[in-house]
View: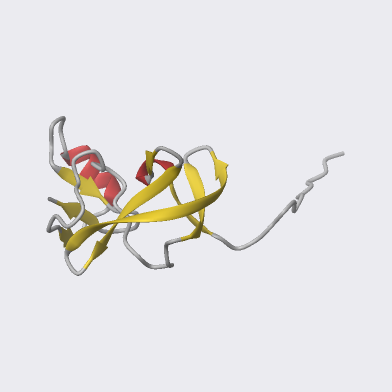
Length: 111
């Protein structure tokens, strides 16, 4: 006999971003969002974590573009240009030392 079981434990709707988008500083967590064509550093409050993702409970709204790759080279206020490329294609096209950053979702950000 076979049995399929689905357990719903602590199920809730929440905003989740890739864990690599976080830039920690001391006890605080930050992300870079694209705002009016510029990278904007913003503090966020995080909740639960799963491998590769983290829940954001404050500081970010649904639909905002979050820079995921290249966060070490991005600075607050730096102009960025969004392009309509899949994040996976951008990751494959960039080699080491590139100044390219991908945003969560179907668009990417290039410095």
